Image (cartoon, rainbow, N blue to C red; front, side, top):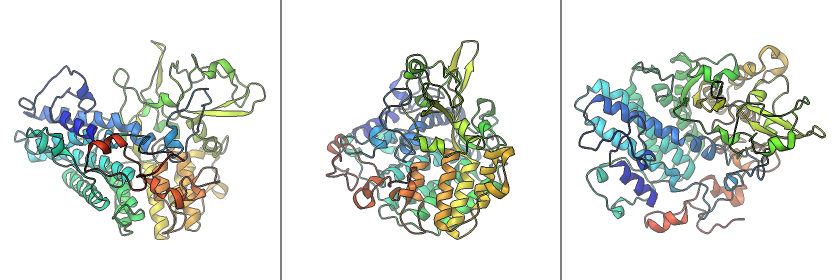
Length: 540
């Protein structure tokens, strides 16, 4: 818990670099310095702090999407990449997590950013220099962001400390022992998440704009639509998943459906005609995007170089692969990279696409083949990249990380329909039809509604093709079920991409749906207890 307390204490200092506020950024020496005494004096301070909260979100997006959302979801290879480099995140991928090797530490370092949100909420509520109508928009964003972080903690740990008030440190209490906190129950966390979502919705009111103050953000700032998407996720999860003392409540399906329908009806959203355009730097904030994490040349780079080959020094260059058509493999994507490929998806994800017809295959993957016998060797994930700056001959990793988009709403609606005994095909087929484009044949390509199991597996399979790399699959496996009210797919062989064995063995590994806390944190905070099941767990 030491890092949790350290981050909270840092956040209390109110050191703000305009547009760069974060717990992590507080380790730096900002150009623009503000203490509590001379900050929070005018609207510009509120706006700049909110900019900083979005910088916090950007700092955490790779953790949210890959580390928490995919690494444990049966997506990734073990050992060596096609590039010849050693792959990272192996304890996560192999489910070999213990208190000595927990995969992530310090509750994901989320409490520093939560502390920043809490400070923002308190100080903005006290801002007598702003009209209540002005404050509502910014408070609505903050409540949405806090719900987002606590929902991640809820799905990751089941139970976790719940801190909502910065007063202890703001008022000068820097005694770490007074700041220790026990883990709140699952029901308490879920109650708070729902309360924050409700308050966010109330404060947004009728403000359905993605950019109400005309800042040109192109859907990179939290909005009412983002709160609705998160609310749909939360209520769908709570309808299907029991956590700690919080039992799944199927009545929440209706609320999830209400939010999904609102997203489809009230925000001017539509599926892009071309799948590749969703992620292209020339189409930021397009009609399908609900919320994206913004990257810009000269400002910040995304993390997707982690998926990429190294043409300069890696095996990609020295071995000399060919693609499947026999063309020489060089720096095919013109990335000019000097990094290393640290993540490679399982080949089953690549081979799931229909070659030559499903456009998503070649948007998502570059495949590599042996120069000697043209046998398949592996892939590089290229879905979200950036652009080549011709003037500097350097690759710029400035494609946005897509957090929420309309296709995700369609998949949630499909799950809801399946739970209600309805037709899921109406939500699967528009996405599939877009992928097949001009080659689409309704008679042979369209999904036909089946029984619960067939539908649930069809939703997962289509979502694998559509949303890989967007932080979904681990959560999908823990929410979706083989039969209604039955085992979640994480415990079923049907949930693994090769269909051979479940991701987790229910009889011996059920506790692993949640993550452990590291020993160091437990030793330093007497109020914390280990995630159940990991107390005496050893590496198998």
